[in-house]
Image 1 (cartoon, one colour):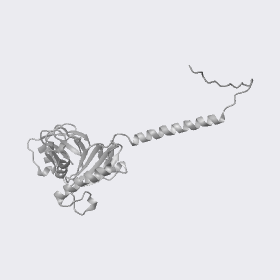
Image 2: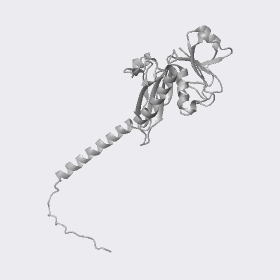
Image 3: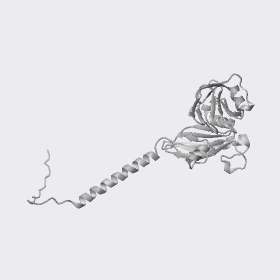
Image 4: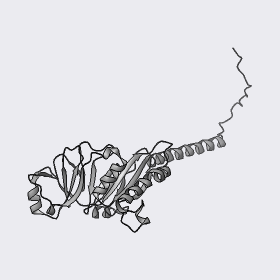
Length: 273
């Protein structure tokens, strides 16, 4: 066993009073301050850069709301996962939220090598214009990139579509999971008759489609048929430019202007103002 190193101890002066080490105390105080600052910063960055997407709210004119009143005046679209906002005229704002946490993922590469070429290809086939952004052309595009942002470890893509049919066709072009989705359209109930259809109001009470149409034929209706399971990666969440009044059986009303659809073997109906 190796010998322990020793050092000579100084003799204490008898009767001497305790003398505080000012430098040592100051050092301890400084260290405590640094630790507190580090803890506070860690909490802040954790809240800002977590693994989940930060919930984003846009209104029916799709500008960032600045006051609570604006959110109330315009029907909101809260983006926390893949979902769609449907306007009365049948145009669609689609939000696609994807995990983008791997180190080798690159937003610029995703945009220039995949996203923009796919949008350009679709627009060229539908309206003869090879563009991906509405600002780059005077022609009304069938599909247009609205915004692309990285929130935490999630990539949030928002795209505008001229029609519900364009939304379906573009997604069938880029996503095999959309292959079975059969129907997605918006009509006014004044121009649409459905015999024997029973609907549910927001409180779960049954009401016939005929009576709803007779009471207010200006209402709008979204018709959806997934053709089976909801496409992988899509939540089944729909928000509308108007309050949801009635739905067919099996649809959950999740907010004043929003619903969630589940697997369907046929047509599902959402009536909104």
